[in-house]
Length: 245
Image (tube, rainbow, N blue to C red):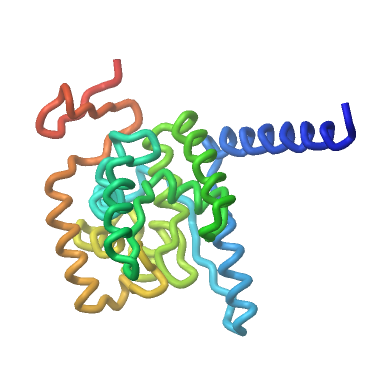
């Protein structure tokens, strides 16, 4: 076996073992720092701004029950049904982007967004997309939907230097994540396409329109299931949850 072949083999072994270990570890451990947080801090320093990073990890039971519903209504209504990739949304986005070359739309699921926040970096390269597919498959295989949502709500960027539900609740609404109202959760979800442009503390009229649309969509989404509960729309009507068998 040549030196190059041996090197490639060990690089692959190292890559798969470390990434697998990271996914398994984050199935149980809080995520206190993400690559995006580090990148944003470096951008602040490079621009001569004051270093700002607000983030506190809280468990799912300390987050308003309305927030998971709001982000599903806004970002990924089929989150409980797909396995990391929403192929119907991808198809719709592809058709839209072919017809509208200027205004592109994406089809990233909550799982994919979680992967981008926790394991990767903001980029549109094919390498990053390939890694996103790999990590998304691993996360869906090893994490529950409840864990994916918990990590997502704790790590997603929700404002300038603000990450996660508890930080945005404190700095934009002067309360804890558990106390966020239904309307406030919809407002936070309305900022997620671009949290550096849209501000839930000082919402524009456009952001208020998005908030009201999300509140309407939330009426058709049942509460998010707790760990140990299952939702199967094929066998359960009216958005009723049942214990896993």
